[in-house]
Image (cartoon, rainbow over all chains, first blue to last red):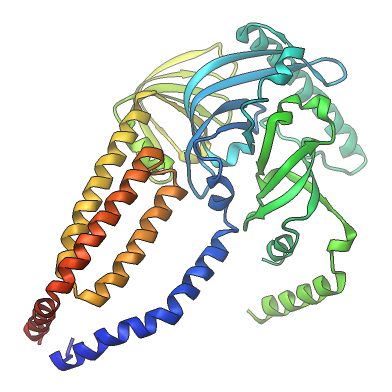
Length: 172
Length: 96
Length: 169
């Protein structure tokens, strides 16, 4: 810095002049672009009860505590719930268990929904509750069946020169 | 970035999002980001019986990578504008 | 508080990791980095079908193979405490910084700082509810005090700045 003390004085007086007209604009611009970020989309659900669907088909219900730009999520008081479908693919039974604190890596999230806590249990009255371990076993069988079916489907499609876009880890 | 801008013009309009797992979700598009993650308000699932737990969901954040289609009203799409924009984008790309 | 920062406070605690392939690892968290790569010790590995178990003294997990982590409940409380400590620290720093700067300039700077703080705590779910509210109040009080202080000592501060510049010359 080769400024003399005299030049410091005017620069300080200039500060308000340059700030006044430009500062709100910059802020507006920042806010405008911020409205279309991952963070802005999720921030409203922080500290609310949310439902998270993972790519492996897990349904997690818990309180969203924090997240980052990758949509990595931290959930507290998580309950995992398994819905078991009948032949017509509609849930008939469910099992649930308390799982505590979860930190989910963003890539494994399919969707995150904010729950209306007054209504969140309504649909459960129409379903039969079974122990979580039993539900887990039944789900494993169901998953094995989907994987088998998809494999067959994949082969058939391949014969016609088409590709079945299915990976074993995508069971949502 | 073209589709990001395009989706931004759809904000506050009614859309139906079809996911790769065949769920169809209808609602008001509230936000979109650069990965085309979507935030949808006042959702209703087309096949409600299949996903009863979505009945109590008010707003939904959907990861862009799991979306198959987004259906929207034809009136909200300006095709000529889109064509122009894609040409312009192609020009920019080729100039690089 | 960001998820990855929360993870650092789970060090030396027992955690469970599920990998994308369904494998489970439970053990004591030794270290982690900003890509969520982890090292654990005294690990029990469970195969995806849950039928085979393996005891491993030490393991390194590449972050991108992780599906999710299950953390001990205590770390949420720990995070809350840390947050309050951080906030107090920040307030103290701000007070100190406030004393050194010139009047007008300082006013603008402070406004910006206030905004930024509020934004951060909102966006990352940092200082929420009670914490957030209190933080704001404190900032207002501090801000008021600072301004008065600065206005009284305006000349003084300018002198200080000048002498600093001279020193640099």
